[in-house]
Amino acid sequence: MTSDISGIDPSVPPSGNGCAECDEAGGWWFHLRRCAQCGHVGCCDSSPAKHATAHHEATGHPVMRSFEPGEQWFWNFATQEMYEAGPELAPPVSHPADQPSPGPAGRVPADWARTLRG
Image 1: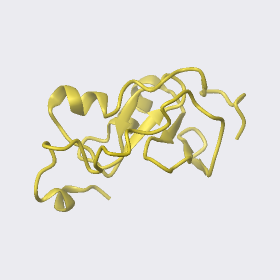
Image 2: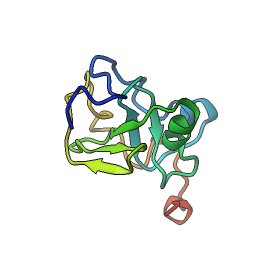
Image 3: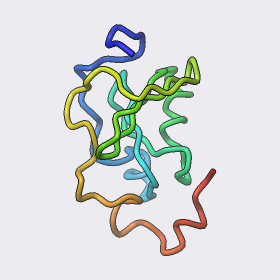
Image 4: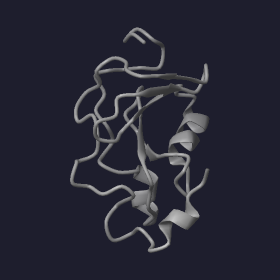
């Protein structure tokens, strides 16, 4: 994957350290994904609300990147392809390493593993 792929703007920073919609609603997430076009951070499809996919569906932005520490993979919704790596995006490239997954701390239910979506 190269930086000239449609739907990627390497200069845009992430929208925050957590899922924007979950933070607004007081929800929680399993893992985080970052829109490679606008920087929106949303929760993954295993999370209760699936906000990263909802962002793609609402905006048409085709590419997201993992927002987990140590992960560099991208997912292209348009082609249904995963890429092990891609262009370097504006920092930070993940949520803070001390932020738990699932997260955020204090909002994750004790039975969180039973509520994961597959």
